[in-house]
Length: 290
Image 1 (spheres, one colour):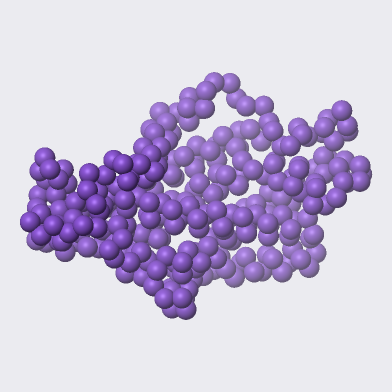
Image 2 (cartoon, helix red, strand yellow):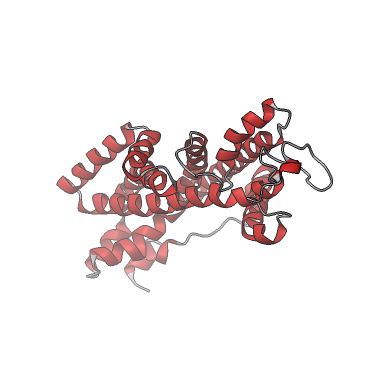
């Protein structure tokens, strides 16, 4: 055992609190986790469990109400609403997940680099993050759409830039604190490289905070991407997407078929609430373990 191992648990692992993970989440957190698991399972199994082709029109089912054949009725083109909700989960969730993955990766890299290098590097990165943080995320998305055209790639690029400072600012503050702890000095004295220390010791000890921040940001990314799709700048028809379904469902609601807009809007609200609950529980767990 080295001096480093006596100062900080190797690899950043801490002793977990007793009891299963679901018990630590509590009833509300467990319900949120079960809901998200069900949505993710439906997303993966949509080709198998969806009763109809989500893009196949059926004029005989246009604006039809709920029935045994179509549990949530049909939209303006007669497409099965339930099938479109199942398939729509793919685009509704895959985009935000990609945004959070990219922004977390970029933000964490910038944060650790700034905290470790300090000086002018830290000052430049901090000012850059402040500038990005001051601009609303939807502005970046609109600029990217203006350059690349309507569609998911432009929106993902814009929101990735917008969400990077949300992760980077928090991680940088934590990394600055960790940078001053004895286990970093012990590793440096032992001749380990800066990259090795950051990857093998600093990053693992920041991991719970990074996960909590990323999960919390995911809910906002779902809302932003759905809002941009609602405006017609994100996911394009005829692709099934919850934000797009809310937009098209509003017209159907005025013509006597509200289930499309209600179903898509309710799913967005439930998923965002579940993600925020989990993010809050993970954040509390991380705070208690530190």
